[in-house]
Length: 146
Image 1 (cartoon, one colour):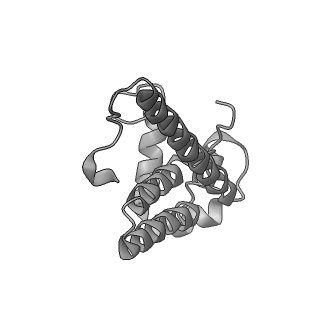
Image 2 (cartoon, one colour):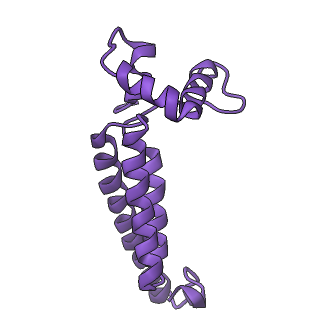
């Protein structure tokens, strides 16, 4: 809850701020499903049986896309790496363009994912070294991961 907020598409539903109404009008005309999804998220906030959760900061959309790009990058196939990072960039731009997020939401989540990825790698390396020290064969990776 430290950084929770609502994106531009929902500001008017929670605050007396009407500055994003022009964007909502365009979305209603050109991407009405965004407005429908927004309304469904708001309607189910207190009853999270199927969908729930409204938080713009940090962007989970961008975080998942960056994590997927990092995972793809591990295989060191240039074209797939390019596809993964292009996808992450498209999610970042699209989440702003459709009003789900402010630009800063993705600019916070991407470095957080990079930090967690790096820390997880360090931890796995530590575990692997510990297993070798104890005389055990590490099983942290399958043969296709290396």
